[in-house]
Length: 200
Picture 1 (tube, one colour):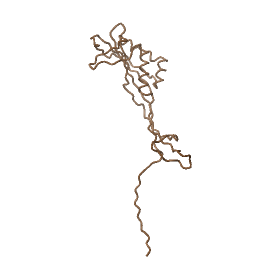
Picture 2 (cartoon, helix red, strand yellow):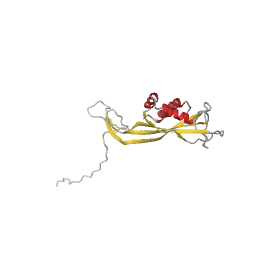
Picture 3 (cartoon, one colour):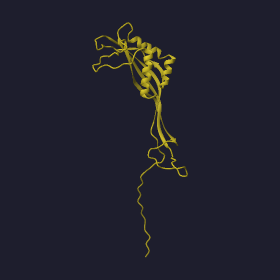
């Protein structure tokens, strides 16, 4: 799965294309919904509600001869000056089940929030949408039912409808630590005892 900024930008663009609506701009702290002036029909928002692991993550330790270890000054004997030993890199990798919640809020007009959400729920299963998800490191698994999210009123007191749908995707996640030296360093403390040889 890609980084969050890339994922956020990619999903925003995809959902805007599928729904024909702009992304949400956020409302005031009193919980009322603020619609962008460029589109009074409504807006959408999405969030990652779950990124659950599937199975057990794999933990690896790999040797990289070209890895640069910070602070490593050991030089390989009988090798050109500056030659290092490389380092070990610890990493984990595993599968994830990603749940994306997609929501639309709009005024109750001829076309309401449910129509926009159902359009996304249907269109995201098309090959072009699946390809866009794959570019973000996501593979569409299934789409949940469209659910009434119980709308409210906007800042002008006008009724707003709200519907949501959960979209389930498969993904892979991996992280790697910084390289560490191949030479273990420990502190050794020793006491040497013995009898000295004295001549008379």
